[in-house]
Image (cartoon, rainbow, N blue to C red; front, side, top):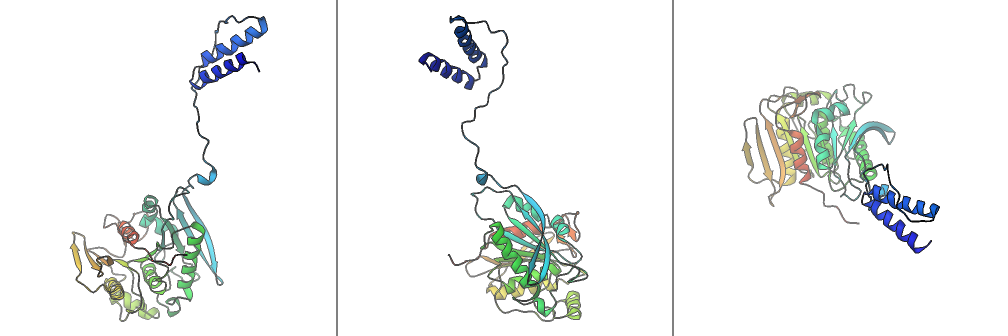
Length: 349
């Protein structure tokens, strides 16, 4: 390739990159006519198609560096001969983003995962917070009303029944989704709230904080008759010793399904377990009274939200889901705020 031709091609490339297709075309046609006719006279260019030219200076990012897309999917999980269905929300995130927190959401009786996700709006909040949300789903085979079996002794222990199944599922999601093991939380409504409290008690090494909405304290019942009695008037007895994660409680004072004394009992048991025996900080509002119990270092170990005039429903939820009280205190947002303020102190490996 001669020097003149190299120079011409370089100049044509420059004109193309600058968007001057007319000049580049004229230059190339001059070369073509010159080679064919033996002269270098410039031809007349009658028709050149102008186009917008976009110059890409950098190659696209490899697939591994692109942000995974948001997903909402249904799955099944098996553990020790038992199967459980669940739905999983995973937000979009960059590959180099920190490991996301995980929130386990336990529905109430007669509900399912989709209904609970819709009613609580937790996925919407989790998208902004970059959190994964896991919704295990009780089967009618395990309970005719799809309630978690919080009132049976075999489902109140660490290595047995539903606590063992739900803990195994949670660990599976942490491992497969790359969640932060120091920021795993559990919350629930009604029977789900009671089971969330049990999981916090049986697995304080797994869950960094617990949210109980309209639920009952661990140990409030040992069979169906004692469960119904606790729901009507409050727990006769409850476990008040042993470890417990930081806990946030919501309960309506107009709840005729699960008496509000149960919410007080959940908060009191957690307060004693956390050593939060100092003066309470009370914040009154037009539709709620929030009582905060700090520990000696001033951190919020327990919060109890008494919801004035609210029945057996998720406060601030969406009317698209069952058992919701739209327009009230946003329980999902307050739980998420409380959760993300706490993390487990895990040994480094």
